[in-house]
View 1: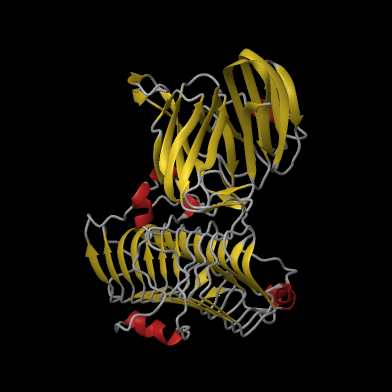
View 2: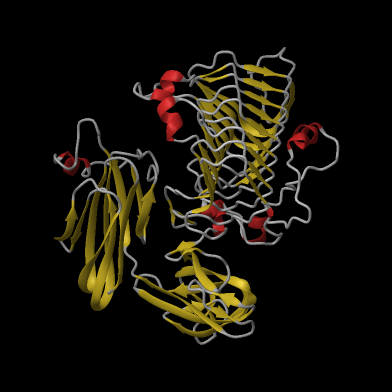
Length: 601
């Protein structure tokens, strides 16, 4: 059930089922690496509305919007009764989810021996109680486990490696007084236990706690972290005992006398991770090539070893019986995997069954030696560099034709591989490169099959008209100022910006702050630029959320100064020579985006 745009397997009011040995990979929408990361609303496995006592074991559920999504259902929200309870989730790979590897809310369940790598949250466990998270392997997540309003949960014998924050436990300051669930159920964050876990290379706090009571952190091993505990608001009843800390400092908390062991070594600093707190990766800090794939080789097995250890002894009694001659569904070593390979176009998630040229980075590079379109090498000044990854079944590729590129890195090679195009800066580039693939059998996005050894044509085209943008951001008081009804914003944008950048492309999507000290809501964007282009007919590809106004050469050519969701328009333009452009934009709240790109008509 793989490479789908919605749900791989869904259970609704379904109990006492077994879901085992399935391939449920790349069930995702709303995310395409390096392009956008918005609300996913997709999952490998969905289970909700009073689905109880099911077994999910030995499945590969990678690259889903969520890997595993469990919700008690509206009945529980309206009455406080029931839930999706008694489910066992064992020995699955839930890695590379743009949102949550496992989300399980308002219920009581067991999650054991699963692999959860490179997700925003490894586990999101809001409002669940008496749930067990035992012997799982977490790594490279923004947060390993995030537990909101949970009671009597146990986090035991897990490994957390290179997560930004390992465990985040909290409750909100208040809840909706009309919500029935909160009226009839205990929704405090209380009596949670974290014990016998191993934490390595945690960039942020190992544990962040806010308004959580009787939290127990016992018998854990911590190696290399920049901060042990981040305590916010009320944390009565915190117990920290019998832990071993190997960290680059000695802190006054927890106090001596709690049977904790300290190994303070300044050299024990945590390794860095490319994962941001927002759940996005920093492309500049991502490992390249084989190093990117190697970080997912963590020695995990869905099946419990017979080797005696405290962790194995705790997990083994939970293991469901295996299927005789059951076929392994897991991604094979060497498979291209990771958030970097969630690539979605208008046909859905790319499935690697046909050749493509997928654009990666597009940057300005300094003077260097390149091979021009005639194949001659020489040194030239600064260039625009477009890196393309060549993906598909194993085989070879060769260039059939190119147009518009000043230089190209190679004219043949192997699949998978890489091709680099160089273009001259400061003017519009209309580039196309046509390739021919030869190798294994292919099946394209339409279902058209081509036999092995027969040539398959594929190509990449890109029109880019660089604009020398100066982009400034300003904040305003959302309680007293409204850009739709007052002119305060006109005065604000004449002042000093709180953040400013220069760029060759205005193409942003913000789930939060644009950067710097800009708040996630109630900000203004002012982008001014100049460009030179050959005479002809073009379009301005404009996307906005919220209000936007565009002025070209002193004349307003488009205005939608309203509160609206992401809206795209294409404005026809007749251009030639030098031009100036100005884009004014405001954000009220929620998601925001701003794109203004000149394209061919």
